[in-house]
Image (cartoon, rainbow, N blue to C red; front, side, top):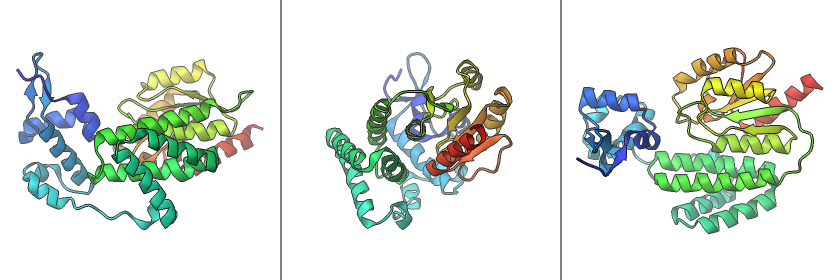
Amino acid sequence: MVNTGFNIAAVERDTGLSKDVLRVWERRYGFPAPARDDHGERIYPAEQVERLRLVKRLMDAGHRPGKLLATPTEELNALAPRRPQPPQAVAGASAGEELDDLISLIKRHDGGSYQQAMQQRLARQGLVRFVQDTVAPLTRLVGTAWEEGRIEVFEEHLFTELTMRLLRQAIASLPGGKRSPRIILTSVPDELHGLGLLMAEALFALEGAECIPLGTQMPLLEIASAAGAHRADIVTLSFSVAFPQRQIPGLLQQLRTLLSADVELWAGGGGVRRLPEVAGVKLLASLEQSLDALAAWRGKHT
């Protein structure tokens, strides 16, 4: 029996391909071809996981999986040239160079220097500008670098964890007192990404909202129960671009039916940017729209 490699949950997290998809491909195409551990569980070798990442990137670019899985890895690499960074990704050449320098610290695995540089930017910019002008575009750049194979999974995780740590510290340092509205922040099952939630929490808290963070991957019934228990005014979900977009409307509609009519449901993140309207749900494609929604809520309730 084989005991080294990646289990199916780890492969799902690293590649963005669901367990069901991995099993279907195994039956239909003969790839991936995992071994089995001592308990009969699937174990995927590193080279197969790397190929699956490449297939996922090409699928996102419009290629069909059946053809990709039958294509040699060398040809797949040729199909996935590295794209140049779009000029609109940063607000000017100097800003772009500064963000690139931060990514370079992550790629050099210099977490201490990265944290120090980010703390200096936070002190210089203030929390609002830091979230909007540093963390948000930096997150997009890191995501693009991961898609293009220019940054490793463990490096992306390092970036995420260090940035989340810094945002939590900044949120904890905000003054207390009576706050409103009361906002629950969380994500649905299988949505692992929590950095977007922390960015929203930082801005909401700075604007005087009472934020109730529940972390990621909360079952819908638990979200509804938490909204009732905390007498929440708003439930905010975050969807990353990695989350299957076709699933989002149904999940939002289901949660909407579980929530009290007087509780607003907001959904933000890259995963909702191209989503059509969902009845009873406010879709927030940017952090700026989140602040506008908060101001609109206050306009109706004051």
